[in-house]
Image (cartoon, rainbow, N blue to C red; front, side):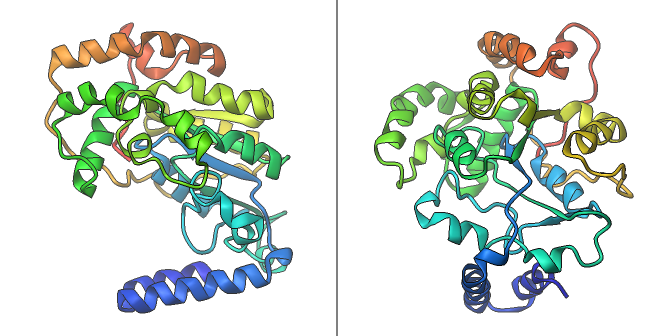
Length: 306
């Protein structure tokens, strides 16, 4: 039984305190053996509420892929960078074990939904993992903002209704990037939890990664196309990652959350607010985002909240 299954069983069966202790023990062992462990070949960097949990699960099932052993998201290049690379490597599989029973060379990865938006993550990643590739999964930024608001409400990080939260966003988040650069070891709560519009302005976030890594190491998955035609989208992604062609038995939609429809006038205002960023994103992607096509009259089905 692998470490991942051990952790999963502990989470299900043990009291929470024992489970936390067990995870710390596994990570401690990981740090002791860090020099023998893999580093990620690729990282799913976000976006939040764009289907990354589903993508993570599909990638984890690929026969040539082994995921981080302790948890889905390590949150190293955004929130835990001060803990150092030995701490980070402690989350990944031992090289000699990873290749046992794997067809071809084993690859490993992690997925942290805050990496795309965090202002320091791209430069940190490029410096510490000079060969890593990154995968961004993006959805209609209007739907993403609405979904993110519900997500923050349910987690207790938001108390305002959606329209009020949008109105408060500039006041809450102004200067957040600079605050993070000045205090890189501290989380900025509003930047992480109240950036509904800013997180959906994908172009400048992706451009950071293109600038740091080059366009050949940045891949964008369009969430609506992914859920509409997983076979085609996965074939392109696996080819880019150098993985063998493969399809999972099904592509389930994880973390979907139903919600009342958005007010049409508010939707229109947000759509206009994202127009410039969507246009710039089209240039980076080299194709038209599905939600822009939708507004031109040829739309795939919306992606599930994830």
